[in-house]
Length: 393
Image (cartoon, rainbow, N blue to C red; front, side):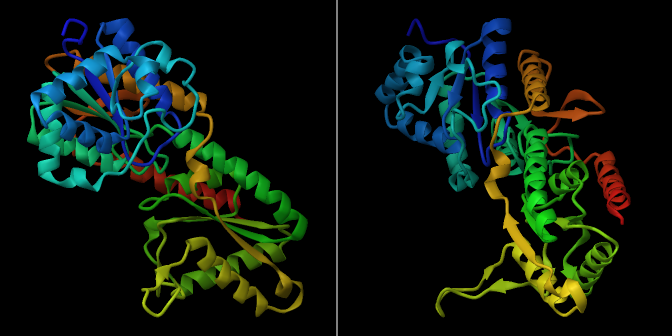
């Protein structure tokens, strides 16, 4: 097939989306075309789209031939408007104008099927049949774990790129999307403050962060939120809840006009709190962290004397608002730097598979399974102390 590229590079986005993914896709495509003269295949919907294509291409030699023909002939935007085409050869026009756009134009998805070794073998077989020289996987810890499995089970070069607003990958100082998400949370806190000040209220806002509280911590410092609660401290006991409420009371008695509390979604309570079941046949479900805290604080203040007895507490779960929006310049720049590092590694025969990382301000390729940077834990502790000093009243 004369117009099918010799040794293309494939890229996919997996798991939760984060701002800056489109900037990364544009950088990968443009660097491949402009600097290295290598075609770039975009795979729709992450591992799910890769497996769909693998199963289609493995049915017969004819199906594989047809797939290659479609990839070669329906390029760029022409391929992207055909939803049944899971692999699209990108060109300049197809990635034009997307540098700051949120989400990912290729789509992303979670794929439990990819956890099966047999499914991953199907994906490897397709990549080899398409003569792919390397696969770039962009996503969080689960996506990169899948990429690591591919490196262990095949000889395909795999480059991981950390894209997650949680910033819970401690082998790198920063992941793509964190800066934008912090900015979004600061914007949200600013808007909640208007009502909180007007009514002298406590606002409890739940942020993302299932395992670590980096996003909440950074946002609390940048927004001036008075309190931040993260998973790193372990389950929050009833005694700790009382101390948190006493701290809020002290600040309000000292003249505070409001209190903003940020709580990461991964925070646990001891004993755990639950919402009532919808029916006797259904198991109880865990309540949102913001609502657990708000209920406790509201009960606490209703038991007080004087004006604080009427203090109102309002919870809000910010949810996927944090993932969207126009990527900040910082995220777009980091995406370009990670893309360049990925290409440098792919084109260097002496390099191996690995993950792009930001360390001490420099981009480096670290091996899959790289240990956490000690500096990250130290920095988190420093941020916690800094916030405590800034928010004291």
